[in-house]
Image (cartoon, rainbow, N blue to C red; front, top):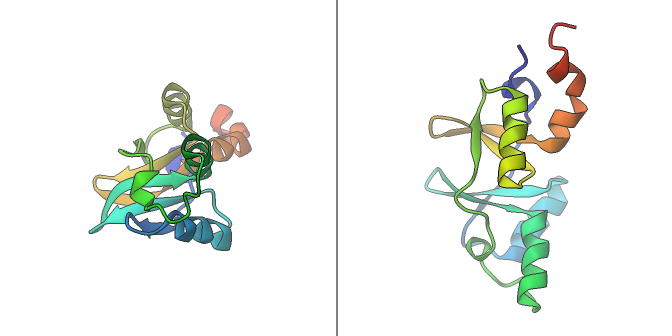
Length: 130
């Protein structure tokens, strides 16, 4: 059986809730990622996605670059576990209207799974035996 662990990315970029939105955008651009996981004292506090940035620009209608990440991050984060099926992860994403899930093992961050990961691996997800 294919699990979330089999298709997730373990490469995450982390930021601080007191970082500016500009700093978070810079992290995304420099690392070619669509989100930054916001941590405090080793605990996940939220996630800032490209979607969060765009929504904030639209909603606030002013320069948000000096705002703190904590002001625009999605929190609490929606998570899944490594041993869950990608289909369950897809269901959670659809139900919560999100595109990314943080993968956890108890309190430890293990990675991230996205809608794109699931689609790219659809052959494995639908036909796990070959």
